[in-house]
Image (cartoon, rainbow, N blue to C red; front, side):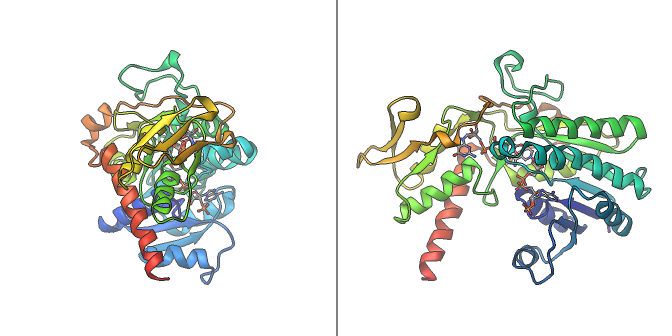
Length: 350
Ligand code: NAP
Ligand code: F7E
């Protein structure tokens, strides 16, 4: 039985990946941070959802704890998913972001080496499309590939770029089976509510049941290459099954605006949105009632924005045989349907 260790087990991808690996017959270990006793509500919640995962307490900032975890578990595969992952938040706490999202990757690689596992343990690093930056000058027409120029636009993107290069450096320096998946946005029913897609799907469900009046958003113009997280964790696993380590882009090859996401999400509750006004005064209005359902709150603007992301997953499709099952429309439907069901359940429980 192969052993996998996942950091960020309590996050979106951690949950999808743990389930995927468990179903493949892996013994799954997951790193959870904080001083969590088995009786801690959060620890209990993660364990109740994934009873097959052995939870290990450690922080990405703590090299000693990570080394101990490697020595005890001796994993065949390590998936480093832990990070401060919210781009907006990274502007507010750039130092912590550099420590966790950047130097945390070095801690993981060093822990593997200090435990003497550098020749046996395979390492996956969660790199990101945020490293490309989305500016006009370096945007290939068909989408970013593994060899496109990096130009990160946030403390998060800069920290991830360090993680990306240190992973590559350990591969080249020590012959480690260490690689990065450069993943474009992937979402779903496990997405944190601080990310725009889930904020919209949860708000639409609350609006439907009269619990919320409208959604306040930031930049409606930015475009993202959005896929489904369940499809992407399979790609992470495929990367570690190859005969030699290499980096791969996972993306859908389509890009859509926040505005389009809103329109499709409201369509799921039979509301047609029309857009009125410009800039910070723009509003999304219900065509049949005239009610404002979306408005702009500049609080959600970022000091530097990534305007447009589009990925080209050709290499992963060709070399890994990776393909996605859920398209953009399917993703919006899946998320809104999930959040409507959750609201209905709350209402039924009184
Ligand atoms: P997520 O939901 O934000 O999960 C990140 C996890 O990291 C959380 O469970 C968090 O723990 C944990 N964490 C944060 N700081 C830590 C620390 N100091 N020590 C240990 N654990 C820590 O992120 P995700 O969406 O699953 O993404 C997984 C990874 O892929 C991240 O590295 C992200 O940056 C990267 N990525 C994501 C996307 C995407 O679209 N989702 C795209 C490209 C790359 P708590 O639960 O305790 O907060
Ligand atoms: O923002 C705009 C915002 O926070 C998407 C992370 O998983 O994917 C994610 O990063 C866009 C941005 O995701 C709101 O300005 C408008 O242009 O959902 P997001 P992200 O920044 O793309 C990448 C690939 C990662 O690696 C990251 O870890 O939506 N936007 N209004 C808003 N964004 C948020 N969060 N909230 C708003 O109200």
